[in-house]
Image (cartoon, rainbow, N blue to C red; front, side):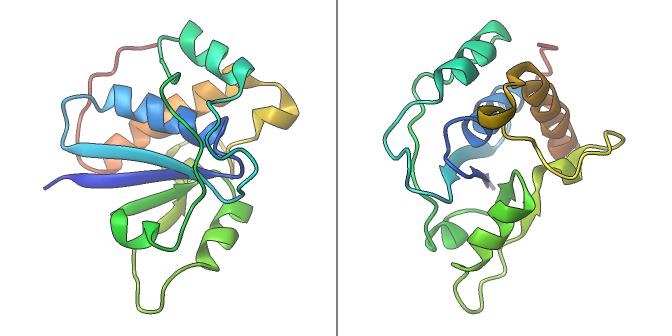
Length: 156
């Protein structure tokens, strides 16, 4: 059975498309589908932010085909696991949760064993695209362990 994972951040141009691309690459060949969305509608239809795209490409991840979309209430029924990048994302998504829906919603850093981070920082504001990608890679490996799988860790 395919596990459908949705990654969510604010604008869907930095963190969540990176998580979609990185996790999708590391989990290649597994029965997992990935998607990403933003809680805001600020960048709908736009590709990932150019500096994020460049940093991802430098690490071997091609995000160029991804386009921003807004998170919708229907996403709760379309996915088996929804992963936000920070507590604000979780709060904004929970406001849209349909009554009776029990799809798990967690913070991506829940899958990082010893990092100490409680959220994935937004590089749109911090400028630390490489640091965010490293954290996303670590969380992606933790997510694969959580799902009980082993992907093709290509050590980017």
